[in-house]
Length: 349
Image (cartoon, rainbow, N blue to C red):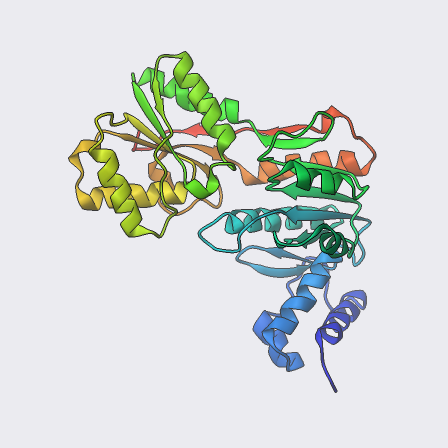
């Protein structure tokens, strides 16, 4: 028999509908499915992705793939990840972790999810075809990077919410935002208590649009309270050791060394801190290191930093509260949702 991904998919659906696979039970591993059906891993992956998108399965990071409560979900949410790199050193990993949390939460509410990661080079016609199947009731748009892209999604004629926009979204379009003002003012008040006089905000050049809100609120607080603010120094992404060494040498020899460094990404802050210790840079030994991180999936080492922690489970529950309102026909500003963070004292401040 010629076995393709559709064969694998339909066989799994049959087992779910016949209750051979019960709700919330794990399915076989990818390797076991590959051996059972005598197909390539890519064929198994395609079948599983389809089944997740159609509400039959859901995944939990690090634990596997499970059968959803019901074989057919009554609502479908499309998650569109715009301009997100698949490179593990970029934001792709961050957003994919979030997708898995959303998928788990959706399965518990009998809502299916479809994942779309359009190529940035797609023209509008190709993109519209790509988004047309499986069709969703509403969309959540992540990492939106241009007004043109926003106008395109408005033209789809489906309700949508923008998560953490990198552009100024016009009034009337619901948004889910980090409460950057709250987070940065938590840092700022701490800087005042510590009597810091100069603060540097460190962000990779590739991500300056993404984390601009954080930078602007921190800068506003510092300048309003007589704290010098520096955001001119770009830092390499994590994993680029030589570039990080060059960055540290340049910063340590500066005439205006900071009392505190705030890193846009915990992984970069950890690597910079580690390299600083290896290089024994006395000029920076009294500098405080600060990061913003996710609580339950923080990069190992984050616990040493004085930080703002964001609870991912709370974030996803807030996202879904807004989505459920949108699915039920609410379209006004009551959909706007703000994600707060908690201040946690580490050893680096």
